[in-house]
Length: 382
Picture 1 (cartoon, rainbow, N blue to C red):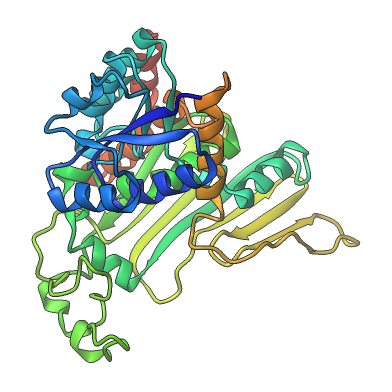
Picture 2: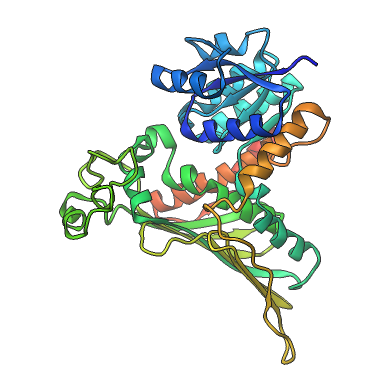
């Protein structure tokens, strides 16, 4: 059997992990092409599991290669549009890491290219594939807590994770779009999926309050880790750098309020300086409540009533993705070989991105954003 050829554009650590998982579960795919301005990254890919891969200088050149069936985009967010479109226009299927794009016009550009191509598109929303979140979705579908009324969810990052972000490309909006889009679009996607409706209104407040030069003392007051790395600087990107004095234009804490078209309301909280990291969701319905944290694996449900008891559906602790990476690559393999729909398609990518755009806009302009303006434009483009 001829192997399916994969071409990687943007050989990041994240896409490397995804591709390794795909190759481990599917022996009928092979990485045959690589494209990244960092030659060290392409060399590492070749040495680790792509010995036969050809290195291309441009994304368009790679996309047009006749031996490539799928293009996998793992580059900076700001490059997703040109690279995903290049793959689709070349007649290739596309796996695109999250988020879909950094602005609404680019989302529409990818959508148009996708529709014209007739090819498959999968977005790397790994949380949606997590057994933890799929269990919650099934509870909601089974009506265990009645109709959802409101919920709260968060992503608070370990302080060293925050330091890493403030030392790498993610600290600049020109590359990421904004922090809530780059880091939290997973969480927004899960929320949208759980509720099954589009967001109607959004408000948000946030700022850069901690990772500033005047707070550098916190890096010095804490002990170094066992490897001798300073606090906030244990991740490789942050080693030798200073997350407090680096040039940046993203926030380090933000809260948002959203209202869905079906009347469900929610609050979201992110912070890059957490002692206790969480990826938690707490959903209140007309007949009960669900409370879970994908990092600890804790998942509880209780129905309303004097005789009702707290039920424990907990699983194992995770790296924050709740086993989603393993399920994602298995489903990608299924998409490669079978005619099955994407679980994280163009619509989910756009709806997550637009919600993030609105939250960012609300924060910057200090006003409530009505998302109808986006949905009308999106629906008129169909």
